[in-house]
Amino acid sequence: MICPVCGNDVAAKRNRCERCGEDLTIYRKMYLLSNKYYNEGLEKAKVRDLSGAVLVLKKSLELNKKNTNARNLLGLIYYEVGETVSALSEWVISKHFQPKDNDADEYMESLQSNPTKLDTLNQTIKRYNSALSSAKQGNDDLAIIQLKKVTNLNPHFVKALQLLALLYMKNGETDKAIKCLARANKIDVSNTTTLRYLHELGEMSAPVRDDGKAADKENVRKIQEPTVFPQSTYKEDKPNVWVFVNLILGIAIGILGVFFLIVPTVENSYKNKLKNQEVEYSAELNKNSQNVSSLEKDKTDLQQKVKDLQAQIDGFEVVEYDDTIYNDLFKSVKLYMDDLTDGSPNKVDYEKVADALVKVKPDKLEKQEAKDLYEEIKDATYVKASEDLYDEGHSLYSNRKYDEALDTLNRAYEFNPDNVDAVYFIGRSYHQLSDYENAKKYYNIVIEQFPDSKRANEAQEKLAGIE
Image: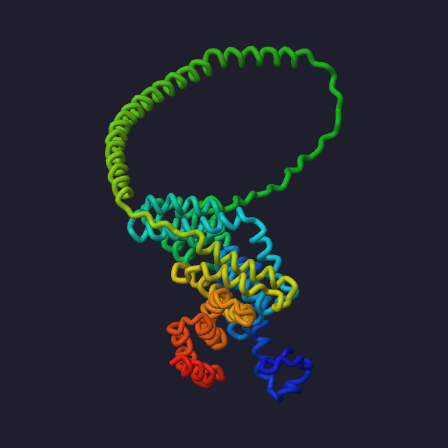
């Protein structure tokens, strides 16, 4: 066990850290309970109780956020139900806690190695959000069309299937709603939203097949015991001519009976059947004529509705979603993860990752998981990038390349406003370029915002020399 206070490796039988003296009894219980919740989540996931598995896995992570097995499994469940951003967030955090020998590497590699699949997942998120917006505005037909495309692109997107079923329920298309809910139920058998919708449709009492129909009960066959006939003794009789004569007479009488009795009866039966069919066809023809008239009227009404809906669609303002928002985020994550493949944070090009991440607009991110992922990468890279840029800027300043030093130091200050050394040498660079106004500005920032640093006294002296 690793001591959570000092990071020392503690023997399994010891309840106190030998280095810092921390009591590890409670930590051990928490880790054991976290592993117990992980095992419960794994058992639920195996029987496709995905919603139940998510709940216990979150409890596991509440007790031990570094339980990478639980976090990786949670990411797999998110990916299974179509929530790709949430899945990727869990895997990136897992990689942060366990850089080596982590299954999250394989999961992210399989996702990032296929740009077409990644673009398809982006399209499903975009179309789902657009369909949700249309549904909220009452444009059910447009929302249904978009959701059909989403479920075709990603058949495991449970939320899209539920929203599509809800729209079908609203429009009275019960059979289609049941089919969508059956697909969602096959993915996640304990999802409360799916079960509630099925309950509303009255389908909870009968098992549901993939085609949305109630399964028929199996007919039970009754097996009868074979009848046993007694065997008689064999006796060979002598040939009897009258047997053959009687047989021929019987056949002749049978033929005559069929011709005079059965054939007229069958003929009359066919005539009556043809008359009945003629009457039924006439009634059906009249009914079809009435239906044609009704359908013509319905066609006219529907054409008018189509025109009205088209006018409404033409009047809508189409909201364009910037796909590059998520692309830039995924690009920065990939850069960060690629540099961590050897398990050494020192090999990460923090400046390159920070330059990619600065292009992301966090206020445009729609998913909370994406925002959390952005903050995680930002915290891990901006400070390191600022330190690297300061070192580069200080070297340029020392070589009297003040203009180039200003560009580099300003970037360091942008990534970490608390980098007092970067702020001070920005002022020094302006001072060397005889731009005293800007030099005073940055000297004052050092004095006011970092009064306890050694740079504050140096800035005070330089500022007194200018004034």
